[in-house]
Length: 440
Image 1 (tube, rainbow, N blue to C red):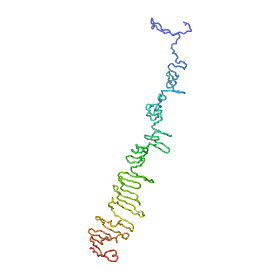
Image 2 (cartoon, rainbow, N blue to C red):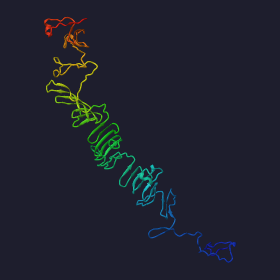
Image 3 (tube, one colour):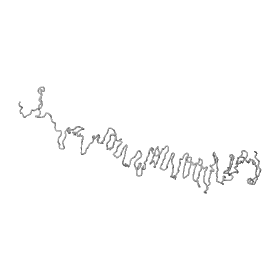
Image 4 (cartoon, rainbow, N blue to C red):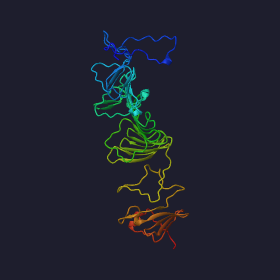
């Protein structure tokens, strides 16, 4: 059967129904327009406009777009996704991520897995920081404040460091008042600075201190509770032993050198050397009118004895003098002999006649002897000695130590041998009494 008209197509816009779907009294649906396609086409999504095309909804993208892998996509919310972007103009953003770096209104930072992988730029407080996450940037080991203060846990500088202020460690500042100045001539601690190690302040603790303290430039080294060397601005002090050294080529003038002022100490003042107890001089060495002057004082400082060089001539007199008030007996106590040696033709004599005795009522000489020297006797003839005989008198002994004469307490002379009366003997004796022979 032919279809008429043959050039027309069969309209398929009617809803097909079965007999079961037909309800009596129910109107049929409104007929659609003629020739309407089976799929409803939505209105245009991109609408041309005077200021540029408008994307009503959805997105625009390249045919090969795969998020994070290839192509590009622009959605109606203004989000662009692309695997590569080349922009020749300005980029403005207040949030986002770039290569793991977070963009915020206050900073650009990267919080890594650890602090060592973290860094950032926070212009309000730390324009540059590293070594801590953003929330802990105030304690980052490297950080720079807006006013230029740099904090770094370690600095290796291979070039020039030019600093006009600051400090190197607690208490060592770089300024002209209490600082450390690096000048062409060396280091300068300024008008109130210091350098120290171990000691907390001047002469306190173990170590050293060099610089200004309280009212002067001072120096201390050693142990303030033990041995030390100090300079307090006017006095050089040494406590402890000085060993293994020789002081040469130096002069100490215009002051006093002393080992202390309490107990036993030594004081040197203007050439006078004093050994003292506390501040009382007891032994001293000084320069007298004609030469050396050396003496002793008692524990109260009263002069007792001195030795000096006297007389202006070339052959000086040596004086051994005890002071009248504070000098008593002199004792020469030794385990051997005491020798008195004078020049040829000189005597051992008292200074005044009839004022000095050899011996005393309770302490007398046991023997008075002569000694032969080179065959000559300078005291008694032929080496005779005089000895006191207990409860008897004085006896004379010859060089063979044999008793040859005794003068008893009654004035009798006892002689072993004969009394010679030749001319020579008459010259020697002022009397010619024949004595009593000593009985064998």
